[in-house]
Amino acid sequence: MFSIVYNIWPMLEDIIVEYTDVDFTWLSWLLMPLIVTFLLPLVIVLLFYLTSLILYVYKLHRVRLRTAYGTAWRDAARYTTAAIWDAHGWIWHGYEIVGLENIPQDKPVLFIYYHGAIPIDIYYFMSKVFLFNSKLIHTVADRFLFNVPGWSIILDVLKVIPGTIQTCSAVLKEGNMLAISPGGVYEAQFGNSYYKLMWKKRMGFAKVALDAKVSIIPIFTKNIREAFRTISWGRRIWLKIYSWTKVPFVPIYGGFPVKLITYVGKPIPYDGNLTPEELQIKVADALKNLINEHQRIPGNITWALIERMYKTRS
Picture (cartoon, rainbow, N blue to C red):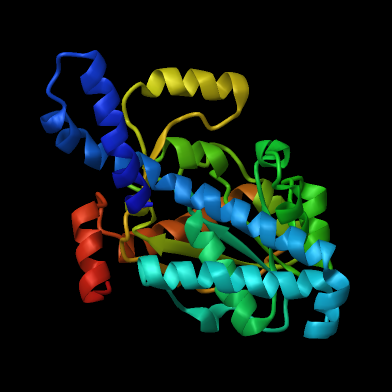
């Protein structure tokens, strides 16, 4: 990515200098960090399309691959894509999980997580769990993702579903694991380095857990807001645009190689005496406790980079 930027930038300089009277040298050095910062999130988009390409390859050549792997093409493809994401997390963020022992091995469970600007931590978390436990975590995604060209095969193979109470409950009743972020795209777009939960009055996840009679496990990834952030200016305008379209238009910047650690909380067991409102409060408190215990608030990119280099842990 950096090599591409540095190869293209001199050509842009020549064009601008040729048609203007501005000495572009100083402006080049000034804008380069900003340009690189906004280009890095594109790496994640490219990785998604790489995932899509791999899945299409497995789909088209499943006969040969089934012979090679001795299993269904979807399973073979999942292992490959999981390995790619796991490698990316280890190389770029030194990603690790603390508290894997809190995940039951033989029971369905509902994971509730804080939604970063880009929930890259959930991709890493899903990949590592699948690679080491051979269990695929189904996930709930915003509806706009189902309209992104080329991503339908990713959603199909990786079991990404719309977040209705009926579909989520059915997934859990079938014995699967499921991950939901109650804050969703709203929390992703308008959250900040203070890590406040932005769930509004959403309690659909609580209704799902009570209907499926499953435990809830809160998970939180330290420094997820320092890896990627949304711009803070024009908040009112972006809020209006989001309320009209329900599409995340707020620009995202980052891709910083900060230390990411996902903390898996203690399971909150099913309690049929709780109302959805009471369960929502209980889960929110548990997630807030994880944030307060492990996250420096407000989050700081420089400190998160230091943690990446020196492997400090709270």
